[in-house]
Image: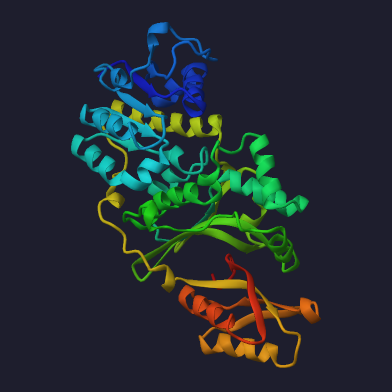
Length: 431
């Protein structure tokens, strides 16, 4: 066995650059924890002329990532490029060459993770991906290892820092969604195209990965019911406050009777729930399991240093495995597809605002329509009068299909002028 573990890095941007810096600045600490010297041997970059914070010999860099994955002296490949191609081909080539892989690529893992893990099993190498979900928060390894003897029932999290910042600003300063998004862009919390964040694609990829690990079966991003926050208004946030709730973009995965329900959407959370107090760009994952009960993992879910910290942690684990000639816990959760529960069958609660005629019998007719579809009302209050009259309701637990049918039929009632804001309610004793 070599006296050192040699690392090849694909990409030296925000995450890759921070990873390289940690490996160099904390080389002695990293090597001590790994039990063997860890050397950063090669780095694939887009430009050789770019100025960098780290100082390495010029021959360390190359603009050809295939040189890095094809180097027979490299033991571990760190993929920090993102996207599907060429990352997938490079990872598969590295695996088939007998190299272990560390990746933070949530998009790749949540769509083509099965192919990657199958190749790793066949080659007898490891693929570790702690940084793919919630940045520097340790959640993948605890789910895979610490909770291996328990049965996870539900995972619910705030796993996108950009949307959490936007909703925090709307909650604390009363600004509109558009104004809060502009602030996030000014602070550099968004990508050039923020749609992946605000429309829930990023969170959907992450909850697909967590659901696969939690329930031992493959969940892909396409299985996730997804709604973003672009339609959340300042009035919705204000109404939530009046009812004792906060609005958050939640990623939820739960299992019942062998079926996995997985979704991303804005929801009202009671202010007493631990996730309701998660502010700004912080992420948190709330886990419910049969034996251990409730756990919450909180921290910075994005950014170079936190994410790179998780990447280096995976490198250390791989170095230990190489030294001891062992492997990390297997990837059986990617082999068989999960049985996905249809969204219409998922049980939820709703907050809904109805614009109504200000006349006797309105509440009775509205309550009758909910009862007709098998939904009971947990709370109701009337606001305004005359042309501004409205009913604000929160329902008890019922299926999405029941709620959708009710909302559709309410539109046809003479007493109801329109069905306005509606939002799911999570984190209560019923959900």
